[in-house]
View: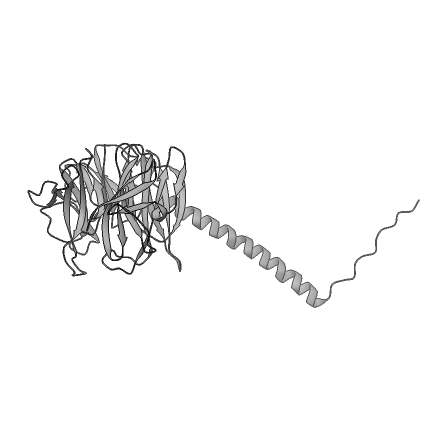
Length: 338
């Protein structure tokens, strides 16, 4: 029996051979570029992560080092320039319990933010992409409730030309509320509806159910008290922004608008939730930050830095006495880790 082999295909012409070679080159080049981009992104991500030895341990003051963009820490009584580097790269940072929240901006034509949830060893547990520019971050005392705010448009609370998006994440259930704007809101005892409602600056109570936040609508700001259990919010008073609940859950530090000067519109106050009496703090400069409580008697906040630094962290007594003091030179996003 003889075997029959198929006839060879018609030889390729010069143009066809060139086309095959070009296609092969493009395929190989594309694969190389894809691998290079993947390796580049992987390297950038590794460089943005915390060093293996950098963890949450205290008592210490953690903060964002504005010179490097990475989280650092220092002893509570250490000098303003002291710091131990090695934390993750973040634009806003906060930590409590066994959880840290790192907001990391990703520049581009359409800016976006990574909300990165970290454990006590600062290993990534979850990453959420949010369109916008990072501005506020908070973690509840238990470490189970997280919230962050981004500027969807604009980049300053000093004007009305901005829009925010505030999310809440419950680590116990994994449930993510991407935007708080739909929460039923009551103002002056009446259910309130408006298309321009914005929320920002959430702070959680120790029970992980009650929270406080800022609401802006029709050119006014309100301090609202909310309840995660029945998903509701009610306005407590006007002209209160970026609330921060004290560790004993009895007072709120906030910034109050005291001037129409866009360069210096706010001053720090503390509100007693039992009496609703407010106290101006000894810091008279305009503070555009969500203050953090170092303990029940002291709040910390960032101000534009001296000597060309982006910002410095200051502290001031929470009862209106005393005077401000520099806690960290070249820092922002202060938080005490116990």
